[in-house]
View 1 (cartoon, rainbow over the protein chains, first blue to last red):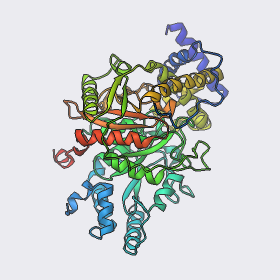
View 2: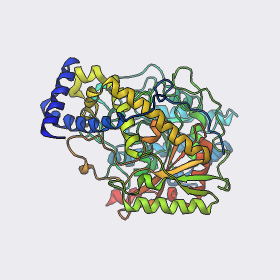
View 3: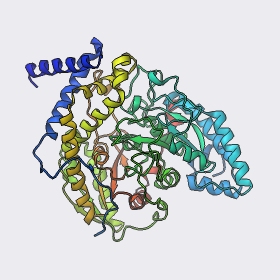
View 4: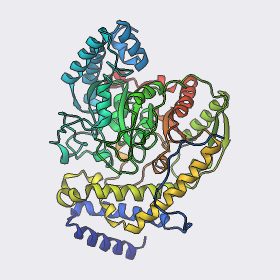
Length: 68
Length: 472
């Protein structure tokens, strides 16, 4: 993540936490932002293309597996 | 096997047989466990609270009832302990957090109630990572549990106290919870057995939530048979848990002892070989295990699974969205009361969007289907658990990270049952292990495979030399 991207992420985080009224202690902020960076990288992976048939109603169905 | 010093070596089945034969009392078994806790726990920190009076009262009741022919099942008179996110009536339940120090529930959660109804003896409440997420934190009201194989090392988490209490012989079985690996990771780090059952098999009611759709409750134990016996008591449909599955409870013990002839195992070696941070000793251990399983009669086929990073991303997005939803108000109003690591892991949930979560849920159905396809042609998947032996406490960076050195979260994403077992020891003397993943609600087959491997590998018979370590 570039410096600009990191700064933008921090601004986004500040706005979102302000919305819920959270005040992030200064000595914890760097660690929180580092974790935000990790989560943002993971988030990118879930936005890949997928079939329209894949939708979150009945996220998964646990049926006893059929034996071969 | 009659001296007090050896009572903690008795399996649940062996102890139960002696209780019923009248050659052992639950009171003696319980007093032995309490003495062992008093000796070992000051340096291992597995327990947040020891419920001595309750334990002795439970034991006396079990002795009285068993003597009069009242038998409540396989855990009757057997000591156990609960991760301190399990609500217990009249007994403080802290989630290892400053935020919950005064929380005394009015009633038991379902699993705790089932154990009580089954005559089990409650020894106390066990350490966890704060709210089952944070990490080994030193800025909480209670210290982190320490690995009995080497107290400078992490015991795994978040069911850290459960892993330590079992591995050190304070208790034969304990309940934990697993949202991304929190039963299986301490099982791997402590060299014991851990079962994350199928999602919906064991009620989550009265267990403090971390992530509603990823949380699973299950046991950590010395042996596969111990796990099967406690599962017999805690499993079953609970209409008060929205995720509980209305399926019959099988006999978890019936398949134990069978060979593996006719069993087909999928071995996704490419899933973990070449992954950053994997230890050659972990790979060697699981390769040896695959050979052992084949010698026991199983067919072992190398197969492919989707990239671990896809499972991890999917699981992490869901976990952090749901955990943030659970904790949002406290994070805003009492953020400073969370441990540093917990806070740093919880707060990033704020940046997730609704679209992020929906895309993760869509991906989840694809990943479930990929695992389910493998399990149409195979009875189980054998794969790694932790990528490396337990790290030292001082290896944790002061500023948090979301990374965990294991490959457990895929089966929280898919809900399949997964059994953790040791595969041996690294040169440092710390355990390494594997996991066996089965079809939904087919824990009996998973346990059968685990028991067969355990019987030849014998790793679960090795225990840390605590008294020697303490003397040193």
